[in-house]
Length: 194
Image 1 (cartoon, rainbow, N blue to C red):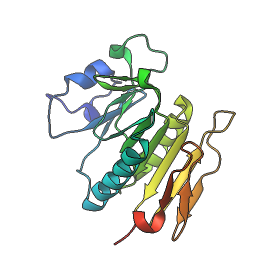
Image 2: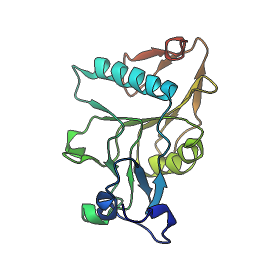
Image 3: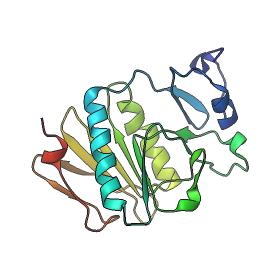
Image 4: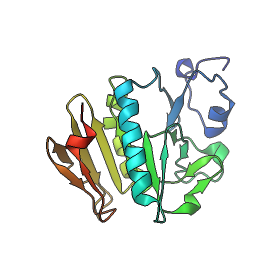
């Protein structure tokens, strides 16, 4: 990349995003604003990502849904007519798609059914603010926020009005169950084992 997008005073599109070629950098666009995703994830972050990806992969293997781990581009068109005009592309830690028409060779094109973000000091504010409201706005049915520092997991469920209801916090010996995937149970003790 010739010029760092975070230093330019303008908005970007997916077309711009595709032209950024520095393999050592990862970026997301939210409403045209470029967010640098550095530094690289920690060991704990990668363990949690692997845990949830493998848990969902195993649970979904006989179902019509697929799980994807970052880096996996998800374009959120927001009414734009072509990919080149899209101003929002994110790389959630984990996403689950049950509508295969939202998948193509470039990644996801539309809101997944479920997104999991694993908080880290460099991304927590964005995950809890910008992404929370973005995922709510585009209709992600469930948004899970994994907080390794506090050993919790918060689940936000989209209600009938299109808003996330108050988050349900799981911790300690809690067993997470979700209405989105009947039969899926996740022990928080297993998630946060030492």
